[in-house]
Image (cartoon, rainbow, N blue to C red):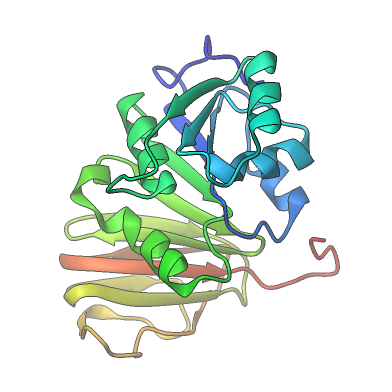
Length: 231
């Protein structure tokens, strides 16, 4: 279990296990650092069980988690935050809200994608909520990650030459897009909402930078597989 004594007041980092598909256990373990607050969103606790992790918090209506397993986590020290089955928000959104209430400024979400397109799409769009604007929310899935860039912000993406970077406008056009370190640079240009122009750019070095003047931009990084391919 990750001690709450090393709380988000100092680390400002939380890791959330959602109830989707966890494609790589080693990648999930690598995403967790000492001092992180670990939160399981309902059935996401099963991923924690497989990884030998006791989450600090388990949140949800618990329609996806057996009572015995929930009790086992409680006995091990997990704090359970129960919500009614008839609720207005998904378990993942409730987990994100709780992480933000603890002061998290960086939140990593694992297992956010799965067989249900509605859930997957909703999870991909969650970082765009104004409620999470003070935190950098990253969705990780083996060799892929998704994060959001807001108007007026800039970000540096870490990776390797040959990695793929796609930029997808949300809610409307993304204007004043500037990039460096990419095969196809953008110099203060507009990516139109619904256009695929920002898809499949390529990193030229270990870092690439992106800045956005106005709008919302979903950044999808696909790290090239290597001989040390994750399993």
